[in-house]
Length: 425
Image (cartoon, rainbow, N blue to C red; front, side, top):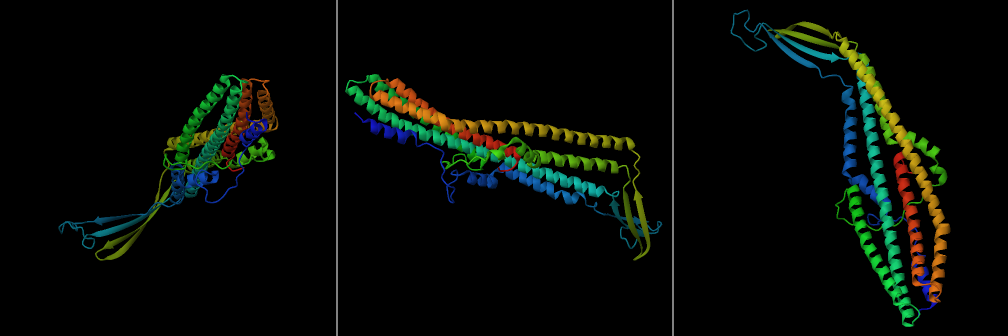
């Protein structure tokens, strides 16, 4: 029969070794070993993020043309191409009656170009906000998937440790059965537990492969590529940093969606001012040299003014611009309310996960360990049956899983909070 001391040492090695890894971040680790490498890979290779950056670049290039003057125009008139009917028609400028060259430049009303340029610049700012929002969403998904991979890895480690322990307990049951101190059913139950755990390992492996495919898609890699085992999860920020009032201020200042909506409002204001400017006429100026024979003997100057007679059309455009501004303000209000609601929900969820983690580590886990040791000693002395020992083993395993789940839940809440706030905490 295996000694009590040997069994207790095995239990300590198998069940008390699981904790959140504190392995340091090192250079040259394979992709997937740390969160930073995955984020860098996504920043460089994710096609959706790259597409948003290209769109922002395109929006930035629209600023200069928006405030530029229209291209000047050139036209030419050949007058009296038959020289009062005395010659055959000709298209040579020196042989017609006279040739008029016209150079024209359109000039918008004062301030229109500046308003167009400002509106385009604000639209470029909004495009940059959408880039930041896309990155925040992408980074949040990567952080969440990384936390899930960490949970699967810890779950697999714990399952393998319990599987090893159950193999040892099976030997204890066999020894007691051979001595006539236990029923054969104890041995069978130990074997059934091992079979169930091997089945769970298969399920965990399938889930890991699915998460690898998801992570590869997020980082712009082929779906079949394998990732390294996560080394560690991030430490949680201090509680004072995660207070809702502190995070609310940061979200109002840095949330990409709110910044985008603010830029859209300011652009709509510029477009409304531009609609009011359309009440005033635009101009065109021109100069026209006139060629007679082979020399230029006359010059003409021209000023052209548009007449804004279609007032109903302009009033409709002004009302449209005002409605677009009101709509932009409403969208910002809706976005603000949703951002703050999501922030409050995730802040409360993170605090609950933190408290659950502390309760598990300080109370539930030590109590489960004590219960298992007591059940093990009782089984060896014949005071408790094997079913009680299995229940105690399941309790300590569940306590370990609860510890990991609480930590991973806190990481997922933290990822959502950073997405909402718009910056790392």
